[in-house]
Amino acid sequence: MRYYRIEDDGGDRLAVTTGGDVYDLTAVKPRLETFDDLLRASSITDRSADSIATLLVDDAPTIDDGVLESSIGSPVHAEEVWAAGVTYAISEQAREAESSMPDMYLDVYDSERPEVFFKATPNRTVGPNDTVGIRADSEWDVPEPELGAVLYDGEIVGYTIGNDMSSRSIEGENPLYLPQAKVYDRCCSLGPCVTSADSISDPHALEMWMTIERDGEVMYDESTNTGEMDRTVQELVDYYTRHNAVPETSVLLTGTSLVPSESFTLQEGDVVDIGIDEIGTLTNTVVQV
Image (spheres, rainbow, N blue to C red):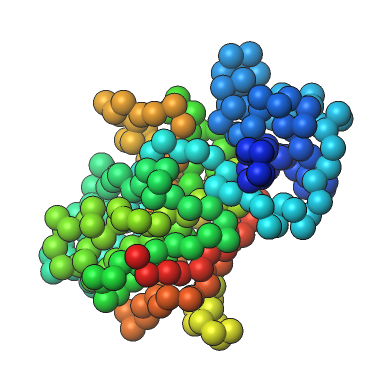
């Protein structure tokens, strides 16, 4: 099942689809406004989120596709978004190429302990069709498409798409500048939905693609597969939650293997599309912040 957050004048609405029609679950249970609410109900009743949704679908009205496209927001209110780095070979190579201290990234790629770092708070995170940011003090900026694991009380309950916006010029200047390269206004996008963990056949066998358009011209168009990831999603989650006071709902981005060439940098007005099989396509426009 895929879960969407509909932004309504009267508040949020939770919608679900099994691949056909989209159903308004909030119309059946008004207190069920977000995916987070559904996760709490799942925890209280000891039933899966999908089983609760299935009980409500028969009584739920459908939502027009046009409303869904124009009104969806970030599908989950993640109190924290974290990210893992250097989990794909191409990512390790790109970090080496940009860095003044390249050997450290090879050490992380080959190490038992992965790189896991804080990425965003809710006020720094945007949803589908919103604008993502590039820093005004950065000269080299890229989107990073990533499979995001949605966690409830530290357990994987679903998957979404994440765009880990990054300043490669700031990050490459000095590894200690990583927070400024990664954490800033509109630095992260999530969406378009959360696909429940039970609905993902294998998180390590998903096709992923990204296109970047500028003034109608395709500047980048490449694809990959999450099977190229050097670590498992569960391994990354284990390190994120280890000895850490994780919030009730969080998202862990699992790294990227789609990296534009060193000659490319994002510009204001660029449109970034990121797609992952069994989840959908996340679209954002770039703005300078």
